[in-house]
Length: 567
Image (cartoon, rainbow, N blue to C red; front, side):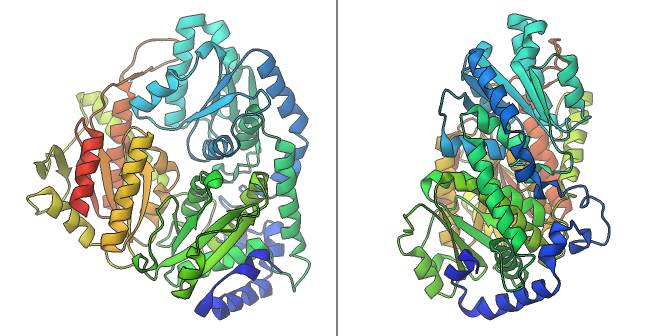
C-alpha cells in the first residue's frame, strides 16, 4: 500500500481517484512506463522515446560515483574554495536545491548558482569570491543556451584578462550532452574536465545525472547515499509493475495530480519545512514545464504564504512535506481537509531522501501527464519566446534601441505599459486583477535584481492578491522563470494573468561578442529587457492578459507602492 495513499485526505474525491487508479492498472501503465512505451503519451515517439533515460539514471550513475568523487577531491587539493555554476532551468535548479538543503561540508566548495541575466546578479556573482580560487561550472544540455553562454563569455574574458588564456580554461568544467557546442569548446579551450551526460535525459529530469551529482559532490554531499535512496524508490516503483494489488507512491501521486487538474483543482499548493523549501523550485519546473501545454496544465504553487482556509478557492490541491519525526503543520492540513479540500502528506526521514523524491516526482509527473494527455518531455511554447527575444535583440543591433510603446499612464514613480483605461495606479492594478475569473492565477514576473528584500516584497504582494482577490499566484525572477514556468504560462488553458515588473538597471555590464576579445555589442541589461519584451509578446499572442509596471530606479519603493494599491 502506498504510504502517501494511506495518509491522504481526499474527502469527496476518494472514489474518483480509486476509479482512476483502477483504470491505470487495467491499462498497465506502470509496466508500460518501464518498457519505455511512448504510446502512454502520444502515438508518435518523437521527443519521447529519446527522453526516458532518467528511468535508469539512479542505477547507472552509481558506477560514476568513484570518478565524480575523485574529481571533487582533485579540485579541493588544487586549492579551489568556491564554485560558480552558470546555467538555467534543469541545469541549475537541482544543484541549487542541494546547496541550500545540505550546505557545504567535508572541505567542499562553496557553490553559488548564477541563473539571472540581471546585471546586478552578474556583478554580485563576480564579486563573491576570488576568481583564481573559483571553479566555474558551465552547465547546459543543449550546449547553446544564450544566457549560459553569455555568462561563460563574461567570466572567461574576466579570467583571460587576469591570468591569460592558457590558465583560464583550467578554471572551467562543462556538463553537457555529447557532441554539443559546449563539449567541443571544452576541448578546444582546455577545460579542466567535461562531463558528458546521457543524451536521453531531458533537462528537468536530470537531477540524478551528472547535472545534479557533480555539483553535489563538489559541495561535499555523499552522492552515494543520495543515489541509494533514489534506487530504493526506483525499485519500489518497478515492483509495482509486477503486483496488480500494489499501488506505488508514484502512480498514486500521478493519479491525484492529473485527475484533480482535469476536474479543475489544478493549483497544486505545496508547503515545505524550512530545510526543504528550495525543493519546491525544482518541483515547480518539473510539473509546470511537463504538464502545461495543449490547453492543459497543473499550476504548482510554491512559496505562497499560508493563509486561512477561507482565502482558498475550489481550484486547490494541497501537499504538505514533513521532515523526520516532526509531522507538525500547525493543524493546517486537518483544517483544509475539513473544508473539503484534497490534502496529501509526504514524509522524508532525512534530507538525503531528496534523492528518492526526485525520482518519485518524475514518475508522478509522467503519470499525471498521461492522464492529461500531454507529452511531459517537450516544451513547444518555450521556443516561441526565445525567437521573439532574438528578434528584439536583432532590432536593437540594427537600430541601437529596443522597440517600446509609450506608457499608458505614469504616476507615483511607476510607468504602466499595456491596455488600461485607468487614470491612477490603484485603479490600473485592481482593474487588471479584477478581470481574472474564478480559477485563474496571477503570474508575477520580476525582471528585477534577485535579493532577499525583493523576495519579501513579492511574498507580501502574493498574500495581498490571494486575500483580496482570492486568486492563486506564482512569482519568478526573469529570465529564470522562462526556463521553469514559462511553458505553462503560454501553453495551459489560458487561466493566467501576468504582471511584469521591470526597473532601471543601476549598473550594466557588457557581454563579450567573442571569447578573449573585448568587443561587445550588447549588455546583460539589454538581454534581460529583450527577454521581458519577447515573453510579453509571446503571452499576448497566446491570448494572455499582460500588463507591465516599470518601477524606475527605486525597486523597493515601487514594490511598496504596488502593495499599498493592491490592498
